[in-house]
Each structure stands twice: as structure tokens, then as C-alpha cells.
Length: 200
Image 1 (cartoon, one colour):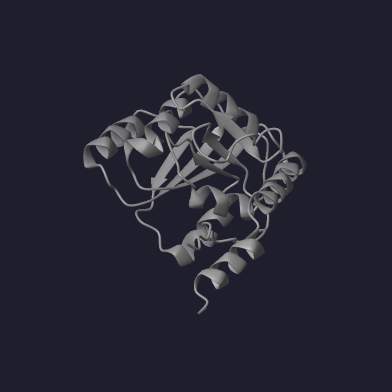
Image 2 (cartoon, helix red, strand yellow):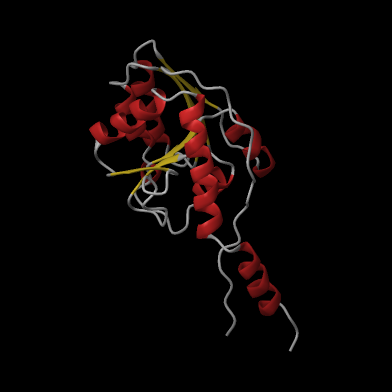
């Protein structure tokens, strides 16, 4: 039996969005459900002092959960701006990532996490949980892993990126790209697919 690995979308390095200390633009691309943990992000933002723009893209899978999120959004302080953009077409992922400084997805579980890989491949450092294949991000200078229920850890991670300037964030951009490149051997996966679909 022939098996091929996940074939993720390598977006490639995107230009860096200008970054000033005290400002941060975050992007999430995910189904709106408890598993993706968007509510934790909103709770963490309650205690962030920096000016943050948070852009959420994704279909609503759990309406009750989204209602909880909307109530939390209404209660956020004026320095926090949250915009929900609904479901996103695959061809528009690049544009969504381009507008962000970091990618946010503290999922409670991911088998692979294609959106996380796409963000890393685009040079967007990721804040995610320890419950995905994308771990040891901080050691690689590619992002930060947090516990799935630890609001304080997530607030601290957001604060850390918000305090960065262009030069500091650029280092993390490069780290994200290097991490994505090392983690997935696209040529090997292409070879596996060719083998899988070849006629014996």
C-alpha cells in the first residue's frame, strides 16, 4: 500500500507589514468552533494594553459558541478592534495573511493544521497551543506555544509581539519561514504522490 503525506499550500514569503511598537495586527483563519479556541483569544485580549486589530476569517460551525464570542467582543476595551470576515476562499488566504503581523490559532487539537503551516510559510509567526504538530516554535524563532486554557500565557504572548518594532518582527518572519521549510519536505511529498498515482 502506498501512502502520501499531507500536501500543504506553501504560500511563500510575503512582504512584511510595517510594525510600530505598541501596535499589532493578528489574523485567525479557522472554523468558528470551541476546538479552535477563538474565545480564549478574546479573553486574553481583555488585558492587552497595546492597540490590537484582530481579524477572524472562517465559517461559523457552532452558532452558540459564536454568540459567546460576540458578547466578549462587545465588552473588549477600545484599544482592541475585532473584525469578523466570514468564510474565506482558499485563493484569498494570501491577502488575509499579508495584512497581519502574526497568525493566531490556539487550537485544542489539530491533526496537521494547514492554516498554521500556510502562515509560517508566508513568514507570519504563529501563536498556537501545544496540541498541534507545530511545537518548539519559540526555540525556532517562529512563534510561541501556549497552554490551551491559559489566558495569562496568551496575553503575555500577544504583549510580546505587540512590543516589537520592524527589525525585531523581521527576525521572527525569517524564523517562521525557516521553520516551515524544515518541517515539510514538499519535494518528498510530491514524489510520494507520483508514486501513489503511478500505474504499475
